[in-house]
Length: 235
Image 1 (cartoon, rainbow, N blue to C red):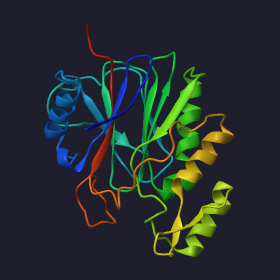
Image 2 (image 1 turned 135 degrees about the horizontal axis):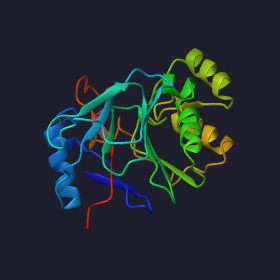
Image 3 (image 1 turned 180 degrees about the vertical axis):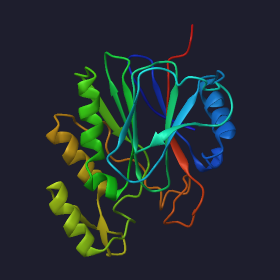
């Protein structure tokens, strides 16, 4: 389990590795998080039915009846969770798509985003930032977790051109073998820049050529990794 970022307000963002097992196994994921944090993770863990959309679900209080230990609490269909409550954890599952974490430096306000190429084209990132700003965010930081990078992410030239036009910048790149590839990090960095947010620590690892992560393109058709945001620990 890799700690990717810690917000000044106490929220921690972790990304699961292959050694942590399939992140769809909630008890195993919770155990890996507890080991990494050196304290039991005993809060509800929220997730979505992800559909490669621009849909956001906002969480302002802990879901009623949510058990603190056990399976995920599925809170609906969408591709980003924006949370303003410190009483829950939230996760998005990925296996090459881009996991994005966003936090406000002063408020208890965080987001986890699942951004594949369809979601990027649908402006899931823009929608997540707009939702956070509607809730009062003023000082946002965004970062990316491991994902399919242009070194390996072969893509149809026609689809690259179409997405480049939609996003507003050239997303064409080349793989190490010289094939046409898509640069999703460039797309997300461009969208964030237009929103006045610099991408923190660009250059996340590639899930396809990085052996430590699950990759759909690499043959992991069912297994998933997870970007999880944990609330501050209780003192």
